Length: 100
Image (cartoon, rainbow, N blue to C red; front, side, top):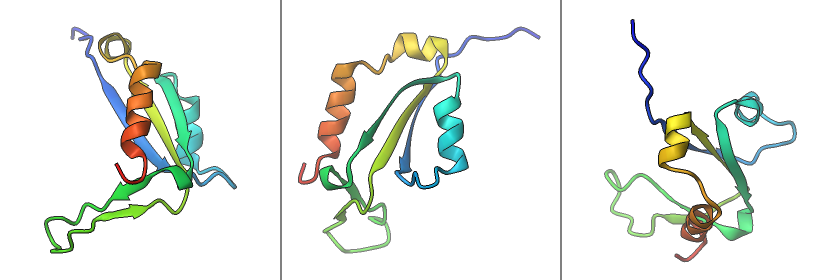
């Protein structure tokens, strides 16, 4: 058995339910693979509903009802390949802004 080094990178979005924090949120915050994280306030972003395949409704965006926590989990090789820099995180936050 030979261990392969793979570039793995996951971006995980969770609702900002922190009172009390969910078990999944605690695990993500404590993960040795956590490379970056941030919170987007509920007033600052919207979601696009994923029902485009089952609905004729063209207005699929809706304001978030709660904040959203964003976690970047990466292997060492993944972090080297796709570092979540301040600039890249800013671009992601801008893409989440309501009305974009």
